[in-house]
Length: 211
Image: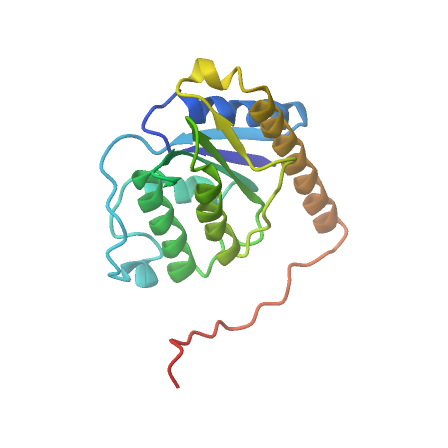
């Protein structure tokens, strides 16, 4: 079973990457395969609400969003990491996740991420992590993804990768997250092997609070 670790930082091997590596180390020790994906530094447009994805099953902007969606189809769990900018996830990561999850929910029947465990990792110099943590987790819950928890909120602190390495509690939290993700994946696999089926799905109901 494979876990994708998405790095939403403009720095390919900075603080966010350092935190994700600590999670990946434990996942590998637990026998889980891992794959890193960096969203890069090229401009990422936000969703323009064209709803082209409803017809095609992919975003109209053919960039790293569609690239990752293809990778995600073969993954069983996800860790999304982002630096904290103004008490939220980075602008590029916001655009990436808005389009990634909406295009899957609209155009592909929510099959890519449905009932696959997910978690987020936040990196900050000092503050804003809990607000960003709340923001990130909302993507998972609307997509019907089980959210994997850790011993504390999934965050590390430091202005550089060298400082993150000194955040002993933060790295401890990353390791607990890795073990909890591995455990949940094992439980899901055991359930599937013993005939436990996914929940019955109803046809979605959409209202605008207007009758």
